Structure formats: C-alpha cells, structure tokens
Amino acid sequence: MPSMGLILLFSGAMGVMVLLYAALSGPATSKATSRRLESVRERHSRSSETVAQAHMRRIFAQRASRSDSFAKRFIPNPALLQLRLTQTGKRWRLGQYLMTSAGLWRSPDAGGTCLEGSSWGVTRL
Image 1 (cartoon, helix red, strand yellow):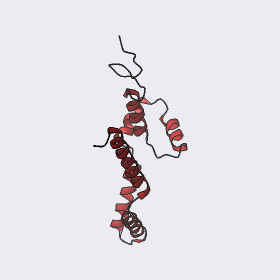
Image 2 (cartoon, rainbow, N blue to C red):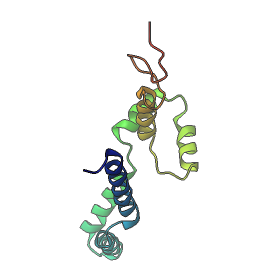
Image 3 (tube, rainbow, N blue to C red):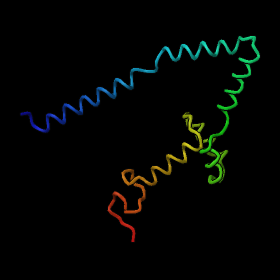
Image 4 (tube, rainbow, N blue to C red):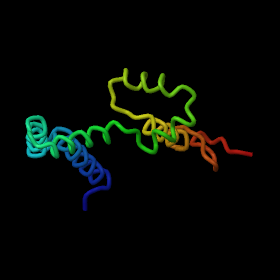
C-alpha cells in the first residue's frame, strides 16, 4: 500500500497538469471564427434589420450593469476609479471591482475581517 505522501504528491502533480492544460489550451477556434464571420456580416450587410441588431448589441454592451450603477452610488469618484482600472490594462468594471474588494475584505483567508474573527487569531469583543 503506497504511503499517503506519495498519493498526495501524485494528485498534486495531476492537478498541476490539468491546470497547465487548461491555461495553455486557449479559446475554441470555432467560436472565434463564427464571431469574426458574424462581425463581417454585420459590417457589410445591406439589410437595415441586421444593422439595427448590431447597433442594439453594441448599445447593450456599453450599458452599465446593475452592479456598476450600484457601485457608482457608494464610490466617491467613480470616473477616477474607472480611469485607474482602465490604466491597469484589465477590463474590470466598477461593479466587479467593488464585489472583489468586498469579497477580499470579508474573507478570513485573505487576512480580511470576519464576524467571528480573522485568520490572525484576533476576535471581536
């Protein structure tokens, strides 16, 4: 019977291989091809209906989500924060940033505060 350490080592190595495969596999080429073909159809279509649908998709894509409008209520200067998020090179919206910050603040594993106490052993009175 193999020892527990050998089993843990093998399962860890398999986990790393699965994560590497997922990271290096990339997006599906069929999806990218169909997306490009659809954008070409929208661009060169003479049908006003197709052009209107493409325009509506662009409008809905630019529209703020519920979490963004919620975040704008509580962030003092949302335009400045959005500028800083854009300068990082990531495509984060204000709502995503607010939810992630709140999640990290509430997570005891990340060193944040928690009702019961934090991972540092400090409890509330």
